[in-house]
Image 1 (cartoon, rainbow, N blue to C red):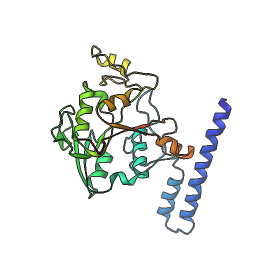
Image 2 (cartoon, rainbow, N blue to C red):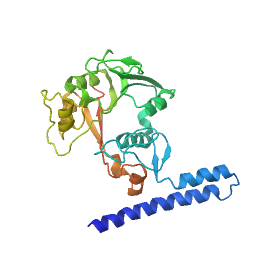
Image 3 (cartoon, rainbow, N blue to C red):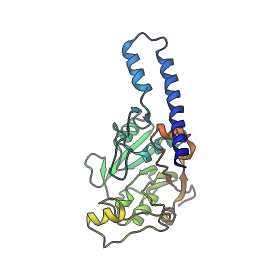
Image 4 (cartoon, rainbow, N blue to C red):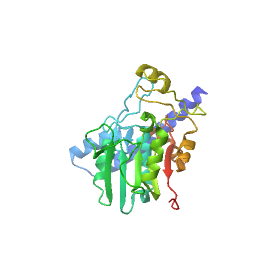
Length: 269
């Protein structure tokens, strides 16, 4: 079994290498510019590509001892963000038209990209980060009902003690027909989310939740919590829409994370 898996992995690498080599040959066939030739060589032999910052990557970096070969060395983003950006590229209609967006804990690269899109009114938010547009508590969002077309909230709720109140607030300020990206880390071995308010020490939270500042570990019931707040849950498996060679190229082969979206019914009052 191990030998078969290894042969399959080598086959994917070989396919990816051939694609890159063909592109390299096309780029330098008629070129006399030595700088362009050098860049083409560098690009051809970069195994990976980050779609978020559009960088050729020689090797993904370790984020921790247990979460390895995941981080882009240039933009510092992880598989979940690369899958999200690939999803947006596959569905450009999600960002068409005049949209008002609220982005919690914005990733730098996404903030740079969204802020220059002329059709977006883009607002960044966080509780502690002084670089955002507005410092707010996600459990008490200071905007009227039905304000935003889009809300981006990735890996935030696991830090919030009252996540159900936060979900309710996110649903409240989302416009009918709007969508929210509501990603959290999920342990697929847990049927129910595990949380214990008596676990307060960073070392204990690391042990139970996987990170010192997390306050729960979400399980497979995560969509139920979103639905209880009013959302229609849409789960996107971008990983499965990619070939093995593409999964390897984008650094998501070993990280088949599904994406969680909350939709607000057009009939919501």
